[in-house]
Length: 157
Image (cartoon, rainbow, N blue to C red; front, top):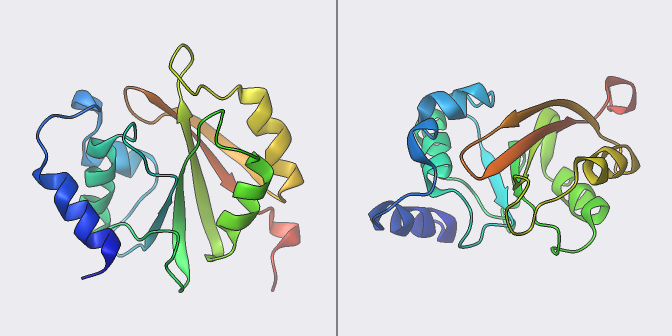
C-alpha cells in the first residue's frame, strides 16, 4: 500500500467530519470524478475536508495519490490557501503529471475562512500557468472549487 493510501486509511478511522451532508459521493460526482480515475492530491493539511476526500475515493474506487506519485493522473485535487506561496508555480507543478484532457480542481477556503483566496487571484494565475477556468462550485462546507483545464489549442496532439 502506498504512503498516501496508508494516510487515507488512517483518515477514514478518525471520527468527526468537516464536510457535513454535502460531502457525499454525489458531491464528488458533481465535481466530475468517475470510477477508475487516478486523482493526485496536493496541499493536504489538517483543514482539508476529509469527507470530500473519502467521497472522491469512493467514487473513483481508489485512494488519492500524493504529490510524489510518478505516473500520469486523470485529475489533480489542489488544496490552496492564501499563504501557501506562489499559485502560478503550484499550478504549473500540478500540470506535471496530468494526462491530456485532465483537470485540476483548485480548492480554496470560502470567504470569511482562514486562508481565503480571492477569486481574482485564481483568475489571474490560471492563464499565466496555461490554464482556463471552466467552472466554480461550492465543493463542500468550507471550500470552494475552481475547475482548471489546459486550453485545447495548447494541448499536444
